Picture 1: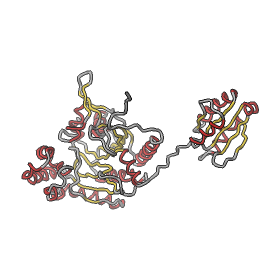
Picture 2: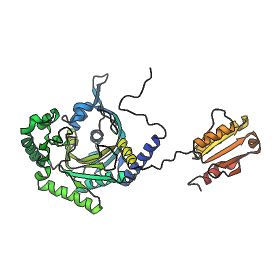
Picture 3: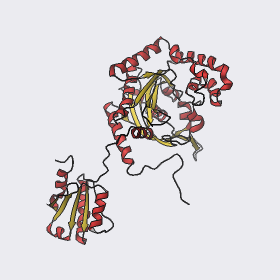
Picture 4: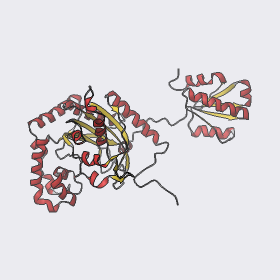
Length: 426
């Protein structure tokens, strides 16, 4: 019986993994320019972290978490998202006491959600995200939005739409909550089972329901923007002013909500408008949150962040037919024939690798013609050829596989010669 990867997971094979490496390198460099530092948190955490941090009323906690009991009887959960883990680390290591605030993190790593697998949505997926903790300045909201858009634009995406909303502060949200309950209560029995529960626990999330989105009551639901108090309205206007000054386009959607309980003020999503991308157009989402640090045991601290899956990013690149500049070819392939040449080939390959040259050689004792075929398949830029006669004369033949030109080079000089010939060489 053959054993395959579990449903909702995937193997990233050579030829694909290089694309991931390139994307992660671009994202890390972007974060460096914005002065966000990498944080790496455990893949599993105590279940209570997500119950308190993500929210008991969310689909993630109620339906999607991989939770198990360890041998010590502790409830452990594979992390379903990154924010709660980052905030837990921030509190545990007293990031709030650092002299430079806000503290700015980025992360890349696997997350786990038990949901029906579909294109771009797996049970194990890789999420890139950032968190900025310790500032109430609307300018940091604008910075996070700019970073999110730049993450896609740096990789060549153009069919993007930034959707923006404000969830207001606690006072504004409470007023809106009461209005939502009053609006949807007469239609309670017409709503799906989940939304009937949400009406009591978190009525804002009714607006995000996929099953009830075509219900007539959705169109006439009260808008959060009509319930923003003076402070919340001023905050939202300032965020928009900063975006305008940077020339970042956006659209306002008063029905945009986030699926987690800890958001307030700025909420946003970035969507792909590329033809053929799929029915689910959201690429990333995020927003500002207050109360999460306190919920996990720290002092009153606000933060803002966003996250997206690398899988959906790669789907968007494919939809826009963007080829990543991934170099899959070898710098050099060493061809040898003869016992002494085989000995010298091992030594030369080692020296070239130590000098920074990407090189491989034959390990199947094939004839010279078959070795050249391997060099072709591996798209080697140069082939170094040596036999027992070359070893005796202390020379090798270096062939440029593109031009076909061949040059005899002393063995002692072949490393320097290739370094000069390869792109970026002296």
